[in-house]
Length: 445
Ligand code: NAD
Image (cartoon, rainbow, N blue to C red; front, side, top):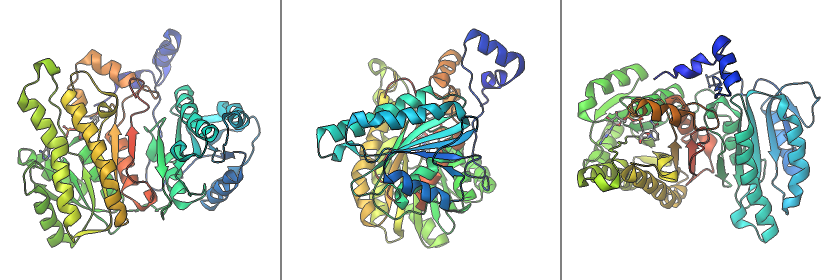
């Protein structure tokens, strides 16, 4: 659905009025179209150690206009802050001050990406403190940026160099327009091979299944994976058959009417994948439902159906996929969680439980995918403009869509772009992670 307020304040009288009254002034975000340049303008790489050097060298290799310093009048497309060698919180001062000096030069929809190390594996308290400080710094900075600019972080796990291909894959996603609605977030990367620049069709030759693909976010995921080169199976309930067929025709894919709570749902998907394509590389567990009620009024049917669709079906299907020889080496799974599963949401004890359960499932399944060179991750959308959120009463909806650092609802495409990244070889080394696509929700976690 359209966000009339954002249109109203985007120019002329509306913009002046919003400015005068101190009202939110969301801007149209830069979104990805294949063939667009990664960045339009210089990227400045700051940082005290050798990490900054190796990141700068990699970015130069991508043909970017890389600077280690820049004049006071030139506009900047992105700022990369390499903080991977911090051993004490006091060491943050100089690099963050240097970054602060440049923020006024950051363009609309500009990017700040901080590269740091995992506090959980620090050897001493001062190093752990310094690494954890980066988290609070980045999240706070994200809340200060304006005009669609974002700040996110890449966290290097033990033994990963700042210039490693896995780190570069995550860095490239955060720099790109694919991460338009990802703000104040981190991705941890392991030492695995990644292909940071997968080109315009990074999923060429891959076979993907998307559940709940008839409409909304699922239809957008299907369109985006197809755009990126994947062959598709689109799944939805028989009741949505007509819409599913229309979507499959539009994006180019095979429609499969199946309820994912059926015992044989995964077998039916594998059977179709086997006969049509001979393998299955990518699973996107997108189908989900809400049945909101306060817990005091919650009937068993509402609770049970949400758990059954949103998580039990995924648990059952994953076991079948993982046992199948058709589920290819390097296979990738992405599950749709929700910020409600992280921060909680009134009236959604069932939904919040199911989406938190998805996160637990993803973390516990990650080692099994790693064994075969694959990965499983979760994407947690915040407020996304779909039929699901269009059903929220007007006043609640208007508040909910403004309560994030970008002051607007995301688009289904924003969730789809994050998923397209996570199922691609650019995301090598990203496993068991939860990536929020929420514009940095201001409420809750
Ligand atoms: P939607 O209701 O518009 O679409 C969901 C699709 O899933 C529908 O086509 C529906 O028919 C299908 N589906 C439902 N039950 C199914 C079943 N048993 N078997 C097969 N298909 C089934 O929802 P959406 O807004 O596009 O959300 C997609 C996913 O994103 C869901 O998992 C949802 O929980 C999650 N999510 C959405 C938002 C948001 O703001 N819209 C926020 C956070 C998370």
